[in-house]
Amino acid sequence: MEQYQKLFDKSEIEYITPFLKLWMSFNNWYKKDLKGIKTDREAIDNYKKHGRIKDEFLRIFDLQNQEGIEFDNALFELILNLRNYPLKNQKGDVEYKCIEENKNGRNGSYIFISTKREKFQILEDKKIEFFQKTLDIIYCIRSNLVHGGFDIENLYFQKIVESSYRILQPIMHKVLEMEETGSLKEENEKLRKENTSLKLALKIEKNENLTQEQYNEMKDIQYKMTKGGTKIREMEKFLDVLICSGDDNKLEIENYITNIGFESLDDFKQHLNQKIENEETVKNLAIVGGGLL
Image (cartoon, rainbow, N blue to C red):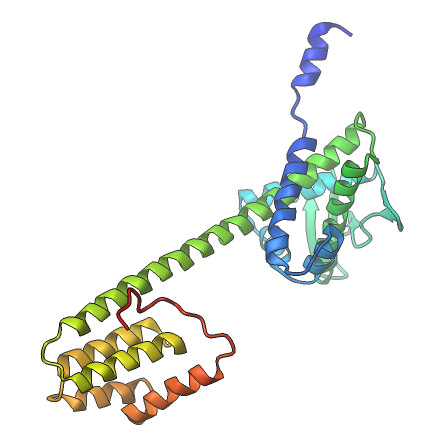
């Protein structure tokens, strides 16, 4: 073989390394998502039944946009190349059994996975089974790569690895995107609560019109709201009402208490106490901090 041909062959993109890195990402993520799960096989069996992997597969599979088309193309190539490179695990062949080819669709509602050359389809009610088998196949590919049970020179196997990467990558991309968004939301909510807490605490501290009894009462309510998990907006509005009204506007306080579903201030306090007593693990949300309690 000429040198230029060798160099050209080496320039082609291979998906084995990216696939293994993608699987490592999945491996690290599921250990956080699934507490107590220790093996990839356990994780796969779990996600076949429920979870974000299943939800994202089905969501992308139903898309009619470019993302959905690319996903369908990857599935089509996986199905096609598995015909020429059968996968095996300890139990035998790993293959799709829910796929039909070139049917006219008269006997049921079909989902088509097709190109101009060939057409595969599954019945609508086989969609979950199709997802589960796809996940099994991707796991089998991972096992072949890790344990050396493959022919690295086989073009069909290379195409199967590529298709598996193109199926799993958009799923994990979305899952990790949601993970990051959720973490940011939690962090922003924590900061918002802490800022609100300091603002409210300072308002109480600086209000010179409060009697010692009123001051103690508001600090007690603020503390109980923190421990009881009452919504921060309710806490903020309620304390603002208390601070601004003093003894002159008890009606406003009573109206607010009624509007959020309580008969009286005492009823509201009893509710907070009950929430604290029933809480198995009381978490300090740090709504009131800095030694202001």
